[in-house]
Length: 372
Image 1 (cartoon, one colour):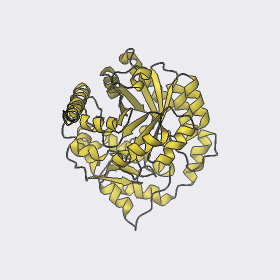
Image 2 (cartoon, helix red, strand yellow; image 1 turned 180 degrees about the vertical axis):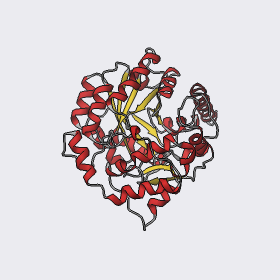
Image 3 (cartoon, helix red, strand yellow; image 1 turned 90 degrees about the vertical axis):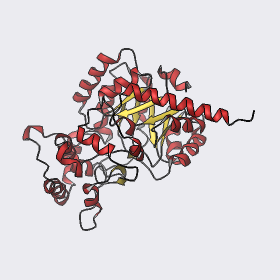
Image 4 (cartoon, one colour; image 1 turned 90 degrees about the horizontal axis):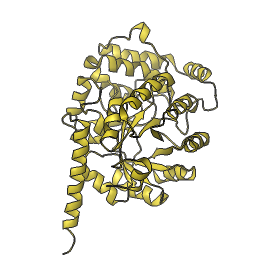
């Protein structure tokens, strides 16, 4: 399973693990893959704390940071982050805020303490993601900057590459992948619709070879539905240079998700997810629940575009984390269809070992099918 990307990044296995949990980042990188920390939701100061913590524990292993700069969003022309947040806040109808609060109140989810109030716009735009990039690049072990939505701005790509870092970007179609390649992206991540979080409409087995062929020789990571070593073997057989996984790490022992949230994943089937705009404003695969159904009801407000909807729901997301036991019927639980294969909590090291064993088993089976 050793590819050129392993050499370029100094890793043993081309397994990229996206996570919002610093413990998982460290554990994956120490187990031979590369952990990638999601920066959305962190202020630059908070991101520094997270990266400092990782730096103290990861040794000489590399890790990555994932940002979100959509290719199109409200307020793109504003370059002052405070003015941008003020401008965007003025564009949000009161009915959307009122409805979001009502859904949580109807389910008995407590309000946040007054001292826990935060900015509503953390990431999601070029001007608010730029300080996150600046902070990430101050940490030498950060070898990869990934953008989760669209092609990063030219200046961000240049800044990262001039600092000796690789730049990756996700896509859901060959057209998007070609835009990434033309912009000089180092690694393209092709995410099929099965994947958790923001994802397109094309299935992985169709999308992966389309993107791989379209952007060759640029390396492509296969994403969307990666839960076993057999799926990794399939991706590599189709020409992928590695895999990008996220859902797989949500319920590992090292993940800081509350027990109630992990139990939501364990009890879900692969049919229990939905692509919904209800939390971020763009189609995002998550566990369907009473929140997603409420926003689908034509009698209720339509979700706003990004980043407006995310500003509406930022407080709801924080409340669902803080009061996870009561909030699960309305909580934001982004996860892919592979959730149906997540039935227990394992350590990161055990997951990495299992993936390797299953991969080798799949390769051996293919070899056994060759004519003698």
